[in-house]
Image 1: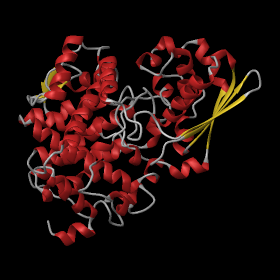
Image 2: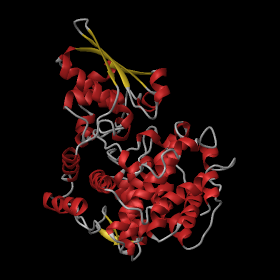
Image 3: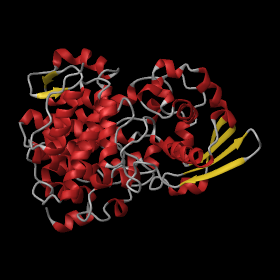
Image 4: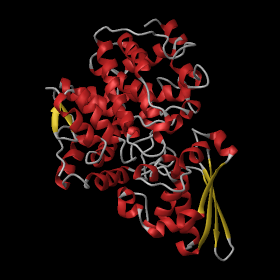
Length: 453
């Protein structure tokens, strides 16, 4: 595309950098980060394959799966790319262990990898093509999230909205689209993107479906654009465009495009270390550190107060969660569960744990508020201030500056692999997990069939 156009139009600049990933040399760090992202996607997807709403969607749409070669990990059958991506991406977001691009407040893996893998399987693409499409999808989606956050998150669920764009880019790339075709895929995707914050509140299953819809709609946009369907190439930044419609401006594109071509977002991902909303992580990490340092016991605790950034308070101040979905977003429940159960894992949200009286008894002692200073640093920094008062009158303080799993404090390869086995073995035999791990991390083959128990 014309260089002048790409300089003045962020959509064209993003499409151009995605198209470069068709042939750009992949350095070892980027290649390994992509393999890690795929392994992490399977880690969070596999346990979700045995749960609603993915199981319900497979039942609802099974008769319309089509004759394609994309594999649906929920029902163990092949079908069209859109069918597999819709259901797999929904499963991937169910247990709240999916990756995060923290600076944009965005979970790119669930929609982007679900779409890319389904399209790659459908088309018989090479592993190299899959990796490049995922990198391109992350590149565009993550950078769009930088342009519209944090105001976008007031009303919109970034993984649902921006996820549609990331999935569209990956799909268009796997369909062989050039920069112009990728640009139109982005343009079309901006009209398909949806998913509001109210469906992240209270009961209901819509939240897990958000990346499922994003993957499905992204494939629609990417395939259509690759065949010549067009959209407005001003869709991202114009006065009536996507950024203006979903944030408090037409987008901070200077920030979004900073370093484009020099670094790529897939190398700066957060791998989730706890099975709940990431806005709770600084509190969990800080309290664990404080307990290790001070050696107090649960029965010694009189009160805990957590001062966090805006999303910690607005989304996670849920003192009386009734369902697993609500509990994953309750700082009161997750903090209490970590003290009582020793961690926030899959079992933390099973009915037996949700009804434990010792967890429920600790929860009223936990409060949360918004700290203006920490809020001003969000989303690039995710921090918490903790004040813990003991029954003997002592007051303990801790300032948590990072989260375990963020780029500043990453999970090692061994820790990621341990997470993969912990989550995967809940539904898949160990020998099958071994084969899949080897395939993802070391082979040149597309990940394929995995059967649930």
